[in-house]
Image 1: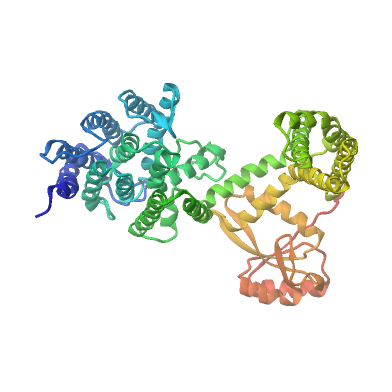
Image 2: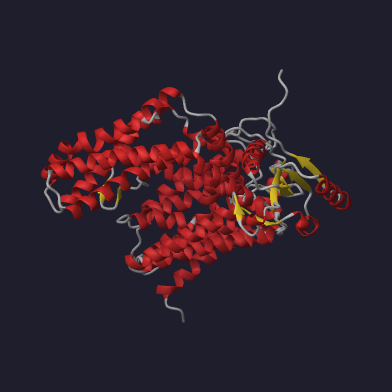
Length: 628
């Protein structure tokens, strides 16, 4: 017979499962009777009217499971999520479900719902469900309150935003609960796993009716309750002695909802103007409370995957994050670094695949700022201040290298004494090169070269004077000169070329991460000379404004044999005009763009190939035109 010590770990999830399983059909009938139906529209993924408010079943299943934890005659066991915590949690979570139920039935403006969520978070804080300490540091009341409110709002809205596909939020909630349960076991808190086991059971019982094709939706009453529960449990039971346990594990457990929320906030708030009607309202302001069809599940569904397959993919992704977090908890800190690096690499791959819309709009926003130079007043103050800062830091590091292990007081004295030479002289030379009168997003390479030579000359003179005054050996003088010039030139010149680097980086990224809604037009460019660079700049700027189609350069031709097989501005020159037909056919080219003047025989060949394959031919020119 199963020992009672282990029996409760089976009974509790079964109670949660049974309550949710048998109560859900009743809620379906009730929702239909009172008209709490989610109707299909352009912003919804379901095709038939579906009842909502299923969160009531999970709420009942979890709390009846909790009642079984505390009222059934178990042998005594240790638990941080004790009876007192449960009563507080029951009180506040009831308010959360009530708010969600009202929203499910009557609808609620986003800012009103956010305000009510904040009130419930404050109430939870008042009742003692809070951080208190992080990494052994006792938080002040005000800071603790702010962090607690943000914590609850983040979890509630993460699950609220991800709840747009049959079974998705419910399944992710169960996986997150499993992750938290595993964490409690590793932390030798087996009693606290019972609450999470009750939540797992309730989610699975409801998932029977919620998985595709869904007979009922969670609604805001369910998605908000799932997020609130995970936030409350993580604050009530987690050991808060490290950042990993206090913040990292719960965030990894709910990793997919949080990732989706971060993308949504970035997409709606930071990027700004909605040029393409991404939320279905052309020309409107893209605000954080607006809705859109670019959540993770929407994107995967548009790729051709069924609703159930999309849910399973995101289940697997979130489960992987949970496993990563549990491994990190169980191993030592040195090995944890490897897992964090792995997680970072995986995150980059996921972002690169799923965040195409955000990358595209980010490029448009940043490029708009680069094309519009900073105000003259800002440039006059900002560049000199940053240059002085770079020179000062380089001077301190160089002095530290020159004099070895000297005390802080001596280091400060020598640094102050050397400032007129190592900072003043280079700054004066840079200033006389007229560097502060240039618009650095619109400069020629020769101007960057002049800046580099001026900065190098000034730094060399300054450090040489210091070395002579201090009787530094020739070897140390060479080392000091190399160190100071390198540490100064890299940030000073790098600051000026940063806008162009950002421009080139986003041009490269936009070639790969184009939103699915933008039609991609494969083009062949003939002519890789000077005009080609000007064409790329103009084409990139126009493409970022055009939110309906984008030209993708698939082939580059030029008759200069010295360029064949080499990259020009990031594109490979595959050959000359003799490869035109082959390239058009193989790359499925839709447009041929000419960036140079071509002889008549080449025109005839291009016209023949264009007519044969139905390709449009365009000529791009950068030239003087007739006067006005």
